[in-house]
Length: 222
Image (cartoon, rainbow, N blue to C red):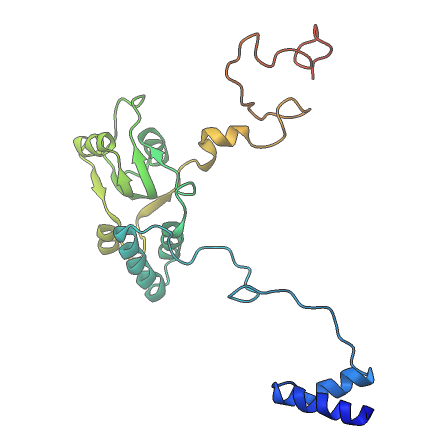
């Protein structure tokens, strides 16, 4: 009776598409079943987090990516690979560069083309703009007018690809990534020893976070 029952179960397993040999091993106790594996997402064990395409839907950026993919593949210039990688980046990783910083970086290199994968902004603290050839994704209106007025030139990346397909005679620049207001609040909590993080306080006056731990007259001063 036990044998007949066993055969019926085995036939049912085979009928349902199961493995009969696996069933025999499981019943005999010879099979050691390990813990279940990890649930892989689509794409398998690939842990690369760097972008391979821009998140932006801007058609101009997508066309530039096509252009610089071609140049990075067909030329041996590292310049094109760097520009392509920066075109993929988020806006935070493509910080703007002011005219004053630009003129500082280009001092003594006025004959070369300044290249920035980002925005060139104006700086009212700079009185005189030197004659420069600048290539960028975007120029603010006042920055563009000041560069052109000084006898300079504002180039797009497709124009640059015709002028310097390998990036020769160019200076590749980046804006200050850590100059954002929010970066000042990162790090150890304000008030802890050796912390230089900026607190989220409405004001720097007497009434705002200036009591215990902030002055010796109130307990202690950290």
